[in-house]
Length: 235
Ligand SMILES: NC(=O)c1ccc[n+]([C@@H]2O[C@H](COP(=O)([O-])OP(=O)(O)OC[C@H]3O[C@@H](n4cnc5c(N)ncnc54)[C@H](OP(=O)(O)O)[C@@H]3O)[C@@H](O)[C@H]2O)c1
Image (cartoon, rainbow, N blue to C red):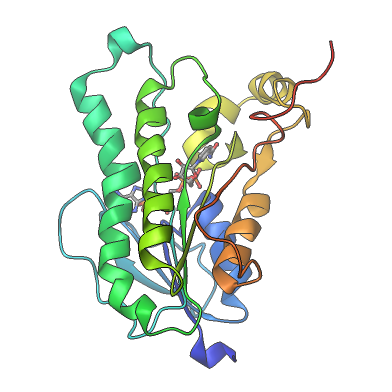
C-alpha cells in the first residue's frame, strides 16, 4: 500500500513517545495528530487538530479510513495513598483510560474501513510491578490493560489491539523524574538494562505495531521496561 493510502492518527503526537511515533510514520504515510495545543515540532505534512481527551467534547473529524490509532496522553502522579484524593484517582482515570475509550470509539467506523487496522494504547511498568507511590496511575493503567485485552477480543479478527507498558522514558511527562543527571543515574540503576529509555525506542515500537509488522499479535501488553518487570540481577 502506498503512502497516499495509509492514514494514522496519533492522539498526543506532539510530544515524547507520540511525537517519536509520528516521526517514524510521517515519511511513508498520512499522519494526523490530536492534542490540546499545536506544535512546531511536528514534521511537515502532518495534520493537527485540537482536542482535549478529558473535556468530553466531540473529537475532531476522523479520516474516512484509518489504518491505525495510537492514544498517548497519560499521567505520572506519584503520591502516598494518604495524599491521593478521590479527585486524583478520577483525573488519572480520565486521561489514561476514558480518553483512550473516547478516541477508540470515535475512530472505530474509520478503522473498520481499513484492510489491517491496529490500535495501540499505553500502560506502565507500575501495573505488573508494584512500585511505591504509583497507586493512582497503576489503577488507571491497569484499566487500560484490561480494555486492551477486552477490545482485542471484541474486535478480532478485524482490528488488532495492543498496549505498550514502558518504564521510565525521557520525555516532558517524566521531566520531574529524569530532569537532573543525578536522578537519571539513580533511575537507570534500578533497571536491569542500567539505563532509562529514549522516546524514539518506544515510539518505534508503537509505529511497528500500527503498521502491521506484528500482524499476528493482539491483546498483548508489551513490557518495554529495561527488564524491570521480569528480570532480577544477582547482587
Ligand atoms: N515518559 C515515561 O516515563 C512513561 C512511563 C510509563 C508510561 N508512559 C506512558 O506513555 C504515554 C506517553 O507518555 P509521554 O511521556 O510521551 O507523554 P508526554 O511527553 O507528556 O506527551 C503527551 C502527549 O499527549 C498530549 N496530551 C496530554 N493531555 C492531553 C489531553 N487531555 N487531551 C489530548 N492530548 C493530551 C500532549 O499534548 P498537549 O499537552 O498539547 O495536549 C502530548 O502530545 C503516556 O500514556 C504515559 O502514561 C510514559
